Length: 289
Image (cartoon, rainbow, N blue to C red; front, side):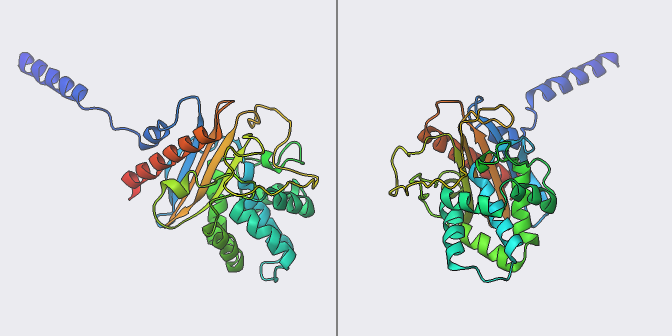
């Protein structure tokens, strides 16, 4: 009897060892980027009301241009959701959302109260990881997380007044391939996710001039604020190049945030985040359909 039990136990152990442990889709997706790239991502399914895929989702990373969504939301909070938008303000809000116009963001950042924009958003939206920049002159140094980006999009889609939702998402659905500074912002979601998408991209510390401008860069103006500055700090990391892709497709919201090793080129980073975004999209398809 003991011999039979021993044989059965041995067979069970061999069988268990032969069956690989179930892979973690989030970990598998993260493996699409090299280990020296800091990666954080989250996907939210609006139909099920839950996050379907997430990795490092509460790590604080500098926002770069993702904060422009908060600037736009604060504009409507300040001026009223149903108030007609003056042409002069449309000339700021539309390119800021569609083409990531930095001068437009700087002008609105100063007008609306600098860091108060972020402080109000933290309270109003219940953001857990977001904080204003230490040096309030550099709005791109706002700290946020992939989880908070999901919360921001959920607020726009589910809680914001219809005129605000339609304006913000309408412009993100019409995001341009080229940013006003000449950088190609088609990396990540617009290249990796099929179908109709809305997206807001962010990048930082790749220099002021793109390697191959896809439009003639608009000259920058001195407006008292800007995306980047000379500060170098560790939390959030203000040293390494940052590249982010965020947006919606179907009933899903996705945020993919990355920090690259110093010296990474624009092309290298764009290729990496597009491959990572594709891996996140496919992993989520396996999990949530």
